[in-house]
Image (cartoon, rainbow, N blue to C red):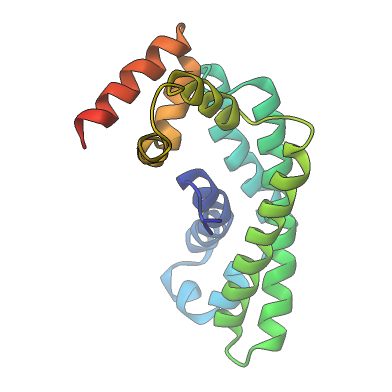
Length: 187
């Protein structure tokens, strides 16, 4: 299992903290950033709301461009909430247990955020497939005649951004065949 399986997960984990820093920098100036980094990274009610709205905006853009389904949109909303909730919880736990508060907070937030992401994906995937899983199933169907090694190599090359474009495509199977051809040329 990869710790960070795509750029979206990383953005969802980092965006709330970056927004918090930017808001506080605007409010207090550069000295505040250096003097109170720990407070800037901790989430309060205002920064949690702004963080959720920021992440929600990215998903609304993807939904409006038909790059994700409504089910994926709902999954992303729940995932964003979990990342913020468990990231904040992890920050507070890590900051108390490790002597260097900032380092402890970052470690705690990363561990708890990734753990909640992984647990959520495992639980919900038993009932509802993600857009990524659906698109990879189409790719696998298109690769039915390929050897297992070649199939694995091709799937490894496919990025989440390509899968989003595939989802938005009117003919997903044709898109998958074209994507496979591009991957085979790289061998």
